[in-house]
Amino acid sequence: MRYLLVMLLAFPLLMLGQTEEKKFNLKKEVKKIFKFSTFYGAVNGGTSISDDDIYSITTGTLNQDIIETPFDYSIKFGVRKIARFGYLPKEAFKKGNENSFSDAATMGKVTGFEFLFEGEYKRQQGLSYFDQHHFLRYVADKWLIKVEYYTNGFADIEYFESTQRYRQKISKKLSLNIGIVQRFAEPYGFDPLANWVLENGNLHYTYLALQEGYNIDPFTSTYTDPNGNIVATSNEVWKEVVIPQVLDGFVESERNKLSNTLQHSVIIGFDFYHYDKKFWLHSWGNLMPYHYDDGNEYSYHNFNGGQWLDYSGGLIFGYWFNKNLGTFIEGKYNKYWNREWHNFSLGLNYKIF
Image 1 (cartoon, rainbow, N blue to C red):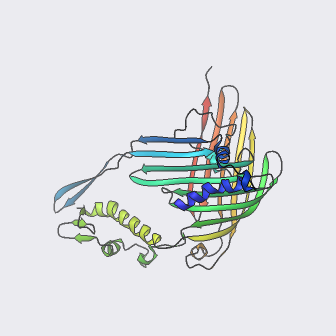
Image 2: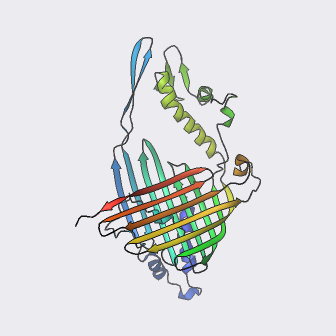
Image 3: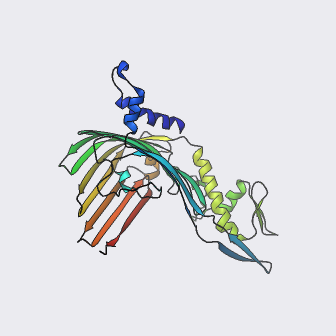
């Protein structure tokens, strides 16, 4: 990851540097790159799901187990240089919990160089993640290039992507693009649990747990982990709490044993932007209809049985019916390798004067 960040930071210097070495001024170029950018950091938190009581009976004795979920939190930090679209509010501070749907757009508001580097430590419903979103993009009149790294632990998706496209303006508001995209990610065509599924379709999870070092004492209903620690005293807690953790750990371990794969794809897309104070519409979309099959054992072609469609898109719409009443719809949607992640927001506003 360290080398990736170095490469991303070095990219704009190579793109924007002077061709003659004697004229190159590092301090001046760095200042030019970060001009109008914002560095930010914020902490947010809140209550997670409430504790859950689980009751069970063992040889006539009532047992009570409590599933506790610690509070949610988010620590976000980053730097961004992205031109503000007309519909975006002029915020005094970046709080770190904003839904910046427009960050996912292929095009920016202006031509030229823009970037985002953002990391977020978060705990959500008891699970901890370190999510990241970094990108560099350069949009010109007839072409665009973009380099992006994205990881979302809750959606279980992580990839590095670069794209080079030809851009054709249809009007001042609409443009089309076509090109190629390269994605570097783990082999999502690999299912570690496939060998543990029985002929009837059920998963032999108990035997898998035993193979992973867990132990079961049927006489005392005691379940221990590979270190000998008691993790459950009832079958209910074993199945509902411990087994999901065993499966998650096994899948993650098996997936980490494999090297990342490089996927080449054809991509086509569009971008539309209109704004005035009464009505605005910003939409974009990307479609990957063809993916090169390099014959890799864990290629998604083998898992899927052939070609597939990967796509992403977004919509930001706002309309004031009059000075008082207005409505808005905002959202983005992604589907890569049959993994989906999305956000949306919609509603009505009424101003009282």
